Image (cartoon, rainbow, N blue to C red; front, side):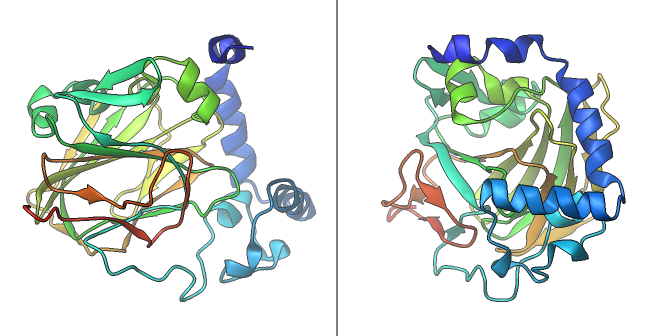
Length: 284
């Protein structure tokens, strides 16, 4: 079966309703029922609870508490690199932005302007730059960390679809990451601007940042934007910056000539938060 045929049912599913239901269940305090769901999830997806600060599934009051569980000290040492991998998961794609086009999968590209919600002035700062798209599966640690030091300048909520973001859907839905609901975080860094985008998906109940809290819900039809010029939010390399309540994808944008990706990285490769994502180019 082709990837386009495989994803056809997603066009027909009531994705917003399913996501609303999942969010309600994930946030509910249901005692033994919640514990049962967590135990099933751990077994179904092979979640490594030994890494968690609290490895006992019965200790979590809600599924969301379990899903966004912190890891024990030292579970993710930080590499000696200029740019750290911000999440656990798998590499979807990474590499050069061709003028303003980001590679999604064979036969599919989308524009930087579409990704950031239509702001062409912001998008132009990444012409011929670099990108990385990282997929978080259900089993992964779901907190997102800073790849480098940064000062937050803007946050943009972009409403959209709620397709799955798994590899099959990435191959089958054109412009997937610029179609789905997303939260665009714009930072000023030592290399210039950097964008880190949290992409929503089916069943992803919400996305949150450390400076704002839960961004969605509410799910609005209009783009919402926050400016932080007079409210400095400084984050250090490796600091937590946000989290997914259920799994999804992170897309990062870097200016031209500012990152040389880890030579061991390859599409579909497994990644862990804190490992080396890249360094400054020798001529950077």
